[in-house]
Length: 334
Ligand SMILES: [Zn+2]
Image 1 (cartoon, rainbow, N blue to C red):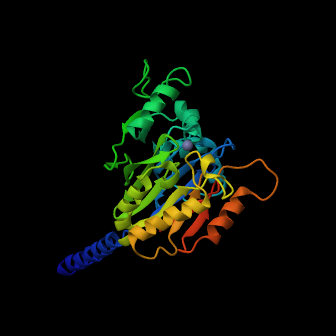
Image 2: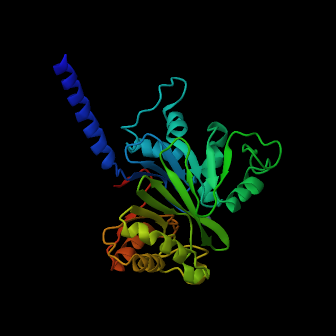
Image 3: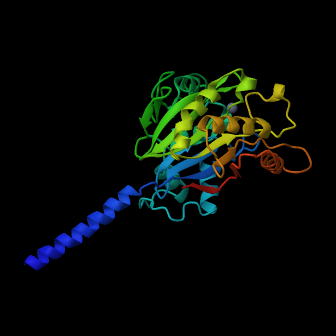
């Protein structure tokens, strides 16, 4: 009897030790699935990034330019092969993915290339929270889900508010838990050619990942919002908590500053990242930067992605690890 108890204690002790050490090394990081990569032109491939804690079945969508088509493309690219979906014979595979994996929508701003997929899927994906700054939600409420452009399926705004999904106001700098996930988000306003856009800092435990919606460089926007953001991110860089960043680079370097309309070129993006590095005060060699929102061009010649990648590479004195977003790609931020 004693021996058995002794064995049991030893057994549980070992289990507890494994669990405890497992908990201690629980720096899991994140995985991002690109549902839509581009900033305009290509319907079916517009800004939408599924963010999950690494290994998690559920996550949130960062912008929602393309939803259903993006889930199908990513599924075809085997992004969800290891996922466990609830057994529901009445729901299609795509339906199961949208309903189960996406537990909420974080919208940086209400430009159509960031919300078109959400509008399209909204009647068939009820019950989801939509998180955004009040300025963004007011545009969605007054100018999109208003019974003229689209039925008001939300829980406030022009009557009748049908209540299929819920607006969640995010307040600048306040950390908010994201329902049904292990994630929290803190939001910071960005300047986007006269429109307020948003940077989302996603956290899971000590790990953090920064997503920026559309933004122009401070110098062109006559703003200090990026400078402020970099100052707030610098301690996370120094503590090696910030696992990476998703940021836009809409145009190549041939674009004139006066024609940026609140967007970045490789030249400006490199300058802004250098400003972050200076604030952090340490090497950021190898820091992953997922480059989003490239605007396709309809001219002959080399693809704009290749030009932007080459221009980022040519000016990359700090050694950032640039990854060009492509639809269906799965990127780990360990
Ligand atoms: Zn925009």
